[in-house]
Image (cartoon, rainbow over all chains, first blue to last red; front, side):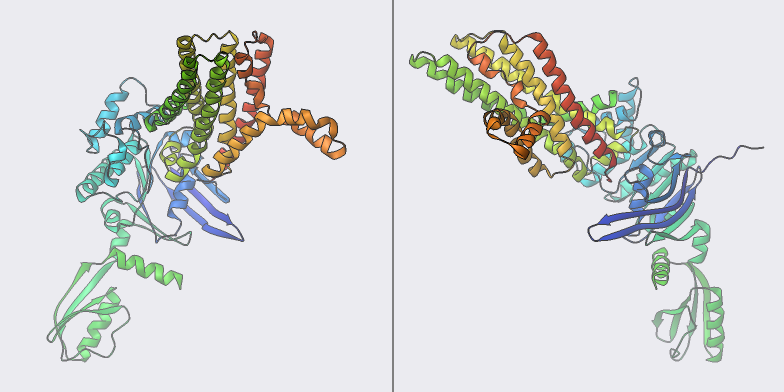
Length: 309
Length: 255
């Protein structure tokens, strides 16, 4: 009988409540999710959805009010779980009085990187994140983007089995974003697991196997990227009609007008079919039909808006 | 322990790169040097004055830098989020807390030792002699900064840095002086007041016990070694209490 490998991250009925004077604030309410080895999972949601709170519980900065959280089968936040993970916080400062090399030396000692070869490891990491030549400058002089690179270097130090990234490309220029994506794809190719939150939905489409959408502390949707891309497909119909009809079928929108040529977008094949029927009744001339990739942002906004009401 | 030492090293580095100890050492030296210059006016008996100034300056400035450094360690790490990448590594919060304690303690001890060397050099230049009790005084002052560091680190988890500095300095002043006051008024008290003062006397740490400056100033002989040992155990016990309280609190706070 083959041995089952436990999920890398397993969250069961997670509740996190903050006690403030006079009231109790629920940041995460009954969250369930599971991430297997080798997956790259995007964790997206609006501000205040509970993404960072969930990540903090995974690292051990917060204790759950209720529920169970396990990383590599161990209690989340335990030393052994943290030994196998790398973490890049959304906003972090690194000691401004240290140089980049000294900061990485500190993190290497804390991560139990053996002394033999430690300096070479640090030099290689600094090169990988594009900080060669700046390693002996004080972090006080570093820009936000450069500090983020230091953060990435300390997160990938020791080749962790799990990378947890909170807002992965925040503060990075386009070249650095490209380098980070390349790095994460290399991680993925080596069978490592990546769990990241991001507001940049383009990162989601470029990197993820699966997307988890969270809002108000709950998982709203969880889909593979392929399924999600199918869902956000849009169906375009261009037709020539005398004038715009008074109403359009549900899920159909006017995209553009050029003289008598109207371009319509339907969210589903059903909507496109209903539009075609309506245009036939108006003696319209259909110029072309086709598909285009929709906006993940529109889907995101529509889904969250729908669920809130 | 290795990880605590790594954190201690960074804590010491921060202190010296901020130049706080340098300012204190130079200021202290300037004040004592100024006092020493009075010796050249030919007034007899000023050697005690110079010793008094030297020890007072040392005691005050060491306590100030110890309190100010310890008070900002953990609150600034939490506020600046420098604690996040640190605690994401396989290091316990206990190791971080102990590392901070070691770092501040070593830094403050180094300041005490530098002041002591300054005083010895100055006394030698001015022809002022000191006995072996001088070195006992230095040892007990070093012991006291470890206790003060533990107390301030513990308080830093419940008070803001500013409030902690104020409260800690007031506590140090109170712990230095309350014992003599209680002894003076004890016979006049009755009932609840008497019990309360007795409890305070026996529970609150006596910081004045770590101050041998009067013995150095007046040329007293060496303090018996069993007393020094007892003081070491006394200081270690109170330091331990504050360390346990502080560490317990630190391990529970949400970041």
